[in-house]
Each structure stands twice: as C-alpha cells, then as structure tokens.
Length: 83
Image 1 (cartoon, one colour):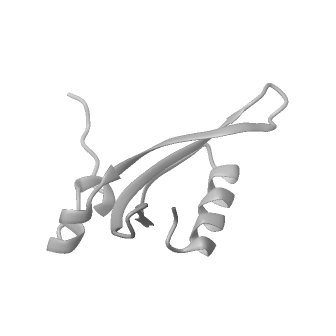
Image 2 (cartoon, one colour):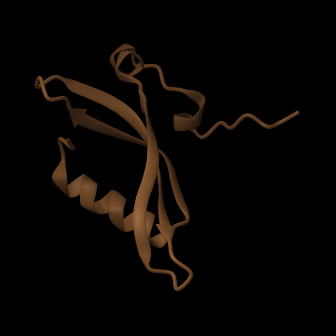
C-alpha cells in the first residue's frame, strides 16, 4: 500500500501521460506495518484505441540502500549501455 496517497495519484497521472515511468522512488507499507522503499517502474497497457486496459510494472526493494544513503545507478540517472 502506498504510504503517500497523493503520490500514487501523481504516478498514475504520469503513467497515463508517458509510455513508461522508470526509477521513481516510493515508500510502501507492508501488511505488518513496516515500511519498504522501492524503485517503481510502471506502464499503462492500452487497447488499439488508446484506452488504458491495465497497468503493469515492477518494484525493486531498495530499503537497505535507502537506509545507507546509497542509490542504484538508475536512480541517479546513470544508465548502463549495452556493449
């Protein structure tokens, strides 16, 4: 569950406007009440007319990195290039 409900609305709006939203850091709450910091990547899946059918994405748990103050390369804007 999103800790910050307004952020959920913002992310959903971004996903509706852009093909993919990558690397957004979010804080979620587990069922047991503990917090988890994640990198969120999300996309809207659309039908041929462009209507959103569903949302799909992935979360990467970065709780320990967030606590240590280190960030993964994607969060700092550095991208690995194939090759």
